[in-house]
Image 1 (cartoon, rainbow, N blue to C red):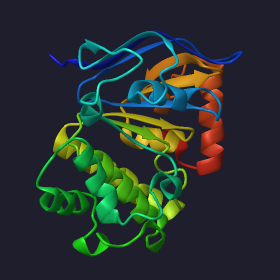
Image 2 (tube, helix red, strand yellow; image 1 turned 45 degrees about the vertical axis):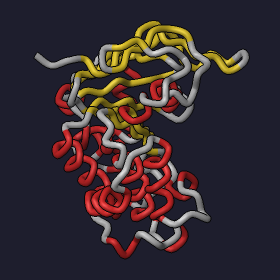
Image 3 (cartoon, rainbow, N blue to C red; image 1 turned 180 degrees about the vertical axis):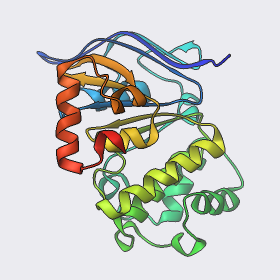
Length: 253
């Protein structure tokens, strides 16, 4: 019987007068790939920031790996839950080498065998040791995102949160990164939550999808249900149609 990796109930987030998350509830099983899809501003990235501990200003109930988590998280939490951000150009320090970027989380958490772990992390994302002493500006967008994934994986987390991990990349590179994430997920039995506005991306990786609009989850369905046209809500059907027009393969990829 599978265990619940993440459980969210009655989640509300306000930024001043803006009510950006409204009574959201969902759960993700251990080892599952769960997608959250919606238009820009729907609140999907805010949910990831709550789960990752980056946004402490929320109300509701959040459980991670069976334990309730308060707004402030203990340091050990961040070894188990890691996040990959949307823009690899912004998420990597431009004045640090790739070696220093990957060494930093190891130093923060007091983890030894730095050289071995860095080399293994780069190998896991398809980069050789020659990348260690380069700077981010010397890498392509796809290579930078691979480094960002390696940085998240180097602490051997159990949960990986992915905030639009391919949207800043060229279309030709997106599939490579998605296939890499799928391979890593199976190798490590990770639990993943993927946020995207692109149904093709979510459908490529995820088995279940939550559809968000204006801070509310309006529908939750399996990918197979969406592919078969069994969406319940008109908004979901509109998203599918728009994604098909934009990407050609979106809801059936």
